[in-house]
Length: 162
Image: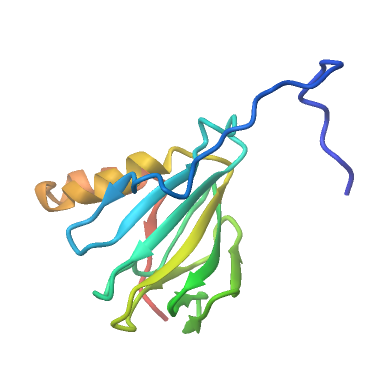
């Protein structure tokens, strides 16, 4: 493997760092008390990746098994215990654990511990996952066909657990 082709051709470098302070409020709050922080979106990274902090309340939450055709997804556990489906079984993960799921890899995640938990989610490339996260708030207002179209638009393909 080698380095990718250059994307910057200047001689002196740019002042272009992006900063999001730890004190920034969540970008999204769910009815169950969970929150999402948009640390780096596909827009802010020129489509290279998206990085989100996902804070789960003690209530059971998280998506069932699914896969993505266009993006990989990685998980880094910050606090608590989060169960991640690896395509064959649910496995508890604790702070410091890292899981990477390539395109097409079956996965899901849940907080079933009854305690708050937090993780970093990274998508590559930087698809517009913010629209997906925000759209989850309106799923109850959609009929079956609208939900199916919403998930297809956002590269979520649900499967039955094996």
